[in-house]
Every structure is written in C-alpha cells, then in structure tokens.
Length: 43
Image (cartoon, rainbow, N blue to C red; front, side, top):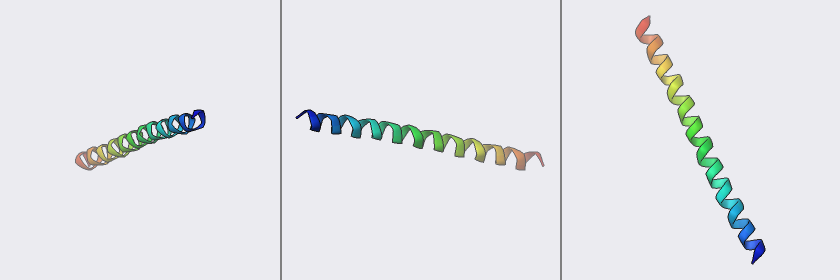
C-alpha cells in the first residue's frame, strides 16, 4: 500500500513538472516568435 502511494505521488509530481516545463517552453517559443515579428516589422 505504501509503495503504491509513493508511486502515485511520484507520477503526479512528474506530471506537474512536465506541464510546468511545457508551459515554460511554450512561453519562450511565443516570446521568441513575438520578437521575430517585432524585428520584421521594424526593418
């Protein structure tokens, strides 16, 4: 029982970290895209 609970907690933590990383990656990709658009509009 204890082992199963630990595995569940680890899986939940992994999911949370994974979604956090995906959000961060999306954010950096979006800002980079916005920077490229701004650069293109200025030149």
